[in-house]
Amino acid sequence: MEPYRANTFKEILIAPCGINCGTCKVYLRERNSCSGCRNSELNKPKTRSLCKIKNCTELVGTVSGFCHECGTFPCIFLKKIDKRYRLKYRTSLIENLISLRSEGMNKYLEGESERWICRNCGGVLSIHIPKCMNCNVEYNNTNFRNVKI
Image 1 (cartoon, rainbow, N blue to C red):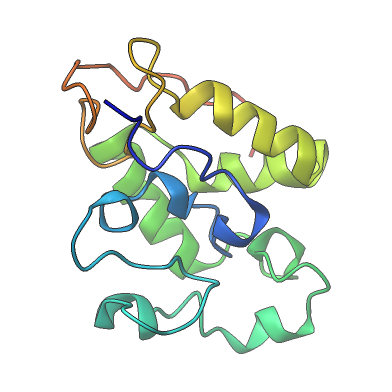
Image 2: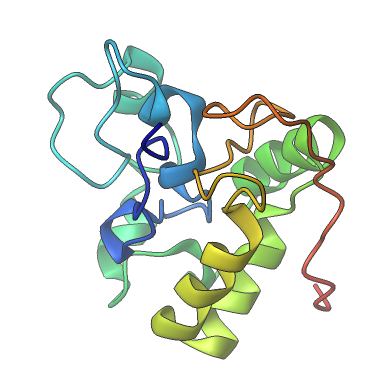
């Protein structure tokens, strides 16, 4: 069986808030998949098109288009989604953005490849589902990046 949507770790798939859209269950699914927060608006769920972070006017003033460059980083919207992702998915978007800022995009994407590839089949793991969507092996996402916020 071919690994499920492998090779999805690209700069265009890193959302302004620090989510790797390449690990999103909506991006990874076969039918009605999303193209990622920073890609075209085609096939995008309404919640992604209306996202307060993605549509933030402060992002327009940044060079990179990522929240870590904003003068109010981390803002209230980012703190809210970060709290939800920490509790539900054991991932910190704020830590992701700090890592992205300190490591640079290439090194950050290398780390994402190590973090989100199934060790059993080589498929892409979803941040939202605690098992590989390709081979159904369960995994435990406990690897915070451990950077100071």
